[in-house]
Every structure is written in structure tokens, then in C-alpha cells.
Image (tube, rainbow, N blue to C red):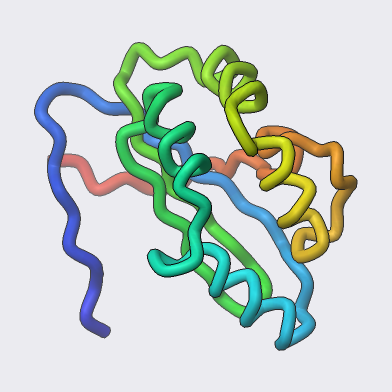
Length: 125
């Protein structure tokens, strides 16, 4: 296993970890990965994520299980950020588009699909 290079932010950040199960259809999984790639992503979605204050976001896949890791400033109001994100250009269109992979309503917002995970271990300094 090679691991993933991380950039460390200055100051305190808050980390959110969320889970979502998606379709286990191999073709849909391939398409889902494609639409999250650097080549095929929707620029407006990445721009919107940054605009609401999110510093970094990663999504990991194992089978049909997704884990999203989000780093944000320690003072970020998560719900306010999600409310704002839902109003940004193409966000509703994106959520409707990915709903076919996620098995949820095409009207569901991101924060209505992804479930927060509980941290049960932290290796302190």
C-alpha cells in the first residue's frame, strides 16, 4: 500500500467523516468513479465546495461503500455551509445526476444522503 500525500493546514481544522453505500452494479461503479475523476468532474461542483469554506474533501471506495473525509476551518458552521452549497450553480443538477448511483431521491441534497461516522480511535500526539 502506497498511501496518499496530504497537505497539512496551518491552524485548527475540523474533520468530518461520512459514509454512503452506492449501487453494487459494476458498470454504475465504473461510471461513478469516472464522474469523480479529474478529467470528468464538474468544475462548478468543486468550486462550490471550496466556496462554502471546505478546505479539502476526499472520497474513498471499497466495494460499493464510500467514505468521505472533509476538512474545514474549526469555526465552520456545517449546516449553514450545506444550506449554502445546495443553492450554488449546478449543485441540484449534480445531486440529481449522482442519485442514480446512490439509490436515493433525485431531490435529495448531499447532506441528506451522506451519514456522519463516529470516530472511535484517535492517535494523539
